[in-house]
Image (cartoon, rainbow, N blue to C red):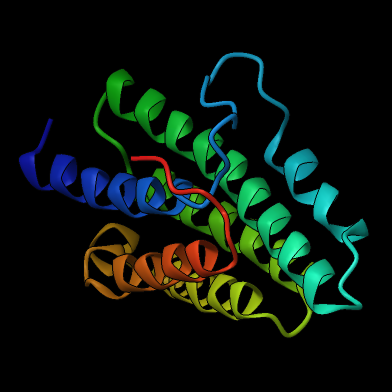
Length: 163
């Protein structure tokens, strides 16, 4: 396997790992029979956002839902990397899925800081997915920075951080 491809896969994996810090302490981290990312993303749409307390609860739910989706995407990346050298199409699919999941969650979050951070992260994942070389585009630091900001927003919302 090409060392630059491994390094890029690890950068994407690190960005996704940083995001899973948004989840609660009991969040499932197994790659086996977890629900699909679409199923995980569907749950926050019913989250209340009418009061400050409800907003905080909704933000926690957004973080937990994203954590589950990111775990699934990390598992997919690991599966691809262990099967052989990841292709540009592999990186494009993972980044596009990441963009789609964050957009769905962000739309459920209204105007909260977590929703804004999800939008920012999704935009960076989308830019990388749309690039001719998504692997290199994801390795520019912007995706990792957006992940760090999302982690901070989740922590500020009261979501526990798992390291």
